[in-house]
Length: 512
Image 1 (cartoon, rainbow, N blue to C red):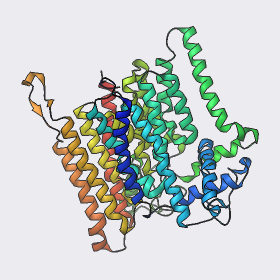
Image 2 (cartoon, one colour; image 1 turned 90 degrees about the vertical axis):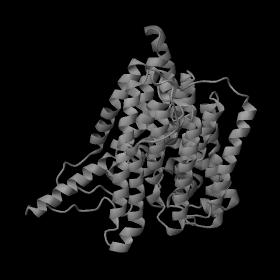
Image 3 (cartoon, rainbow, N blue to C red; image 1 turned 180 degrees about the vertical axis):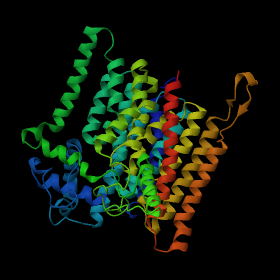
Image 4 (cartoon, rainbow, N blue to C red; image 1 turned 30 degrees about the vertical axis):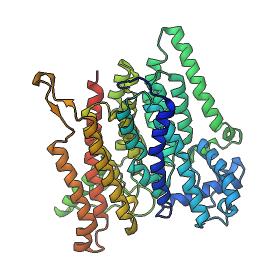
């Protein structure tokens, strides 16, 4: 994966990592009373569903609009948590009386469950960095354990991404060590917790087929059979009970609600932002020239998750279209993996796969930028160029999450988190690469961590976009055109993430 050092003593490493985790936990505890999204009520209702109803009714219940739509392993996790929630406050898990229950007991229990589940992230980071030099190890811990994106999404907005990324990092760490069976097993488990991680499945399949199933036809087929049996066993454990109860079709319908539309209520900063704006721009110009162009029925920016509005000019995008786009974007990575399946590249390959899914996928949430920014934190210590790329991407990814926290009292929190993260990254990368050489042919001239004028100009643009949306737009327009600041954030961040996608693809193709 990267330069290895002599393995340090495990107790000493765990003690250092516990310090990082302890500081993060204190911050998370302080954030408990702050804003939370409707996702907190979503997960509270899932606690009630899994506690109050038999398994055969979990995916059919419609007591609330927040129906269960995660894979079965996550439903089993909710069932496990519901046993403790019932002991603390039975109304938390009451199917009817618990609707929109906002007592402190419910909020504190769910917040604490996320904090405790982050222990999986702790172990995932630990395994991914154990063999690294201490400076690189500490830098990765800072980037992942203190990730402002995870703090915003999990401990303010409310979700369980840290828990899920722990499984992902564990899987990748085993693959990076050449332990393919365990890596494949853990990825299969992850898919049964949250199916959106399946974007990387083609990379896993090609990598394991070429790396694990090599050694001749007989040996390769035997190993393929072993890996296939493990994956089937995992999925049987997850979905088997629902097959038994005749509910598997309902489970699949809940997990893949394609009727939700191309974009989320807030446009994720991806390729489809430019497609939508091109459609609107062409329609606007044609109307100016006298053409009768009907306006779209609904807006892409308003309300809860809803059906996609029709395009005025450009062809309507379907789920199949986005699926093909993702596969096409993935194809260079898959060809490279087929040709040269090296464990040291696995973090980079999987991060690229999630970037493709984010840019070209169907109904992408802005939170999905964490899917590639977290694995790329492990890659960031490999070279100075990787560090420069991650510095930009991490800022863009975090800034794209700002619209999730729209209440005034949370504004200083999200700004402070991003500023502290930027400062810590700058000083940490500077310490890591203070002795980097500019090139042997130039006499080994030393250079510190610095970014070019293009990156600096782009980051200044981030400040300009934020000043406009937060201060100038309300002052000049009042309550008019409320979608413009969100649109600007989405479009501007999409430029940065599109650049990252190109940079990642280039680094994969030229890596030696």
